[in-house]
Length: 82
View 1 (tube, rainbow, N blue to C red):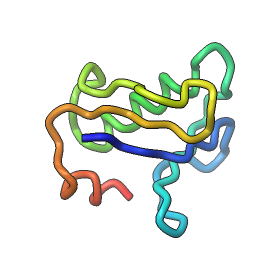
View 2 (cartoon, rainbow, N blue to C red; view 1 turned 30 degrees about the vertical axis):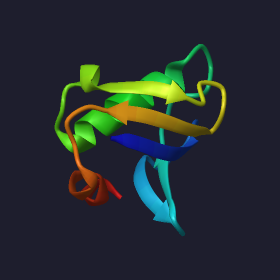
View 3 (cartoon, helix red, strand yellow; view 1 turned 90 degrees about the horizontal axis):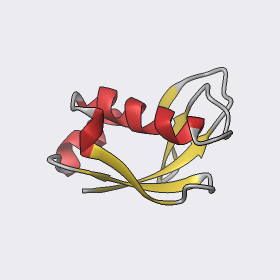
View 4 (cartoon, rainbow, N blue to C red; view 1 turned 90 degrees about the vertical axis):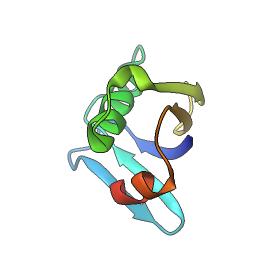
């Protein structure tokens, strides 16, 4: 399943939220040398209860709008994190 997020790096408040139709992820790490991207992978995996190796960034490495491929989940599991 493809998960599209609006990422807010360097946030004091952490976690997932919905803002309108967008799924937003706030991470503490700043967008330096891929730290925020790595934090996103870990946060998605933790929220879904899966291994981080099942989550991969497929689009938006240098953008705040990112797409991740998550192996082995459906829309029901995704709805639970936002």
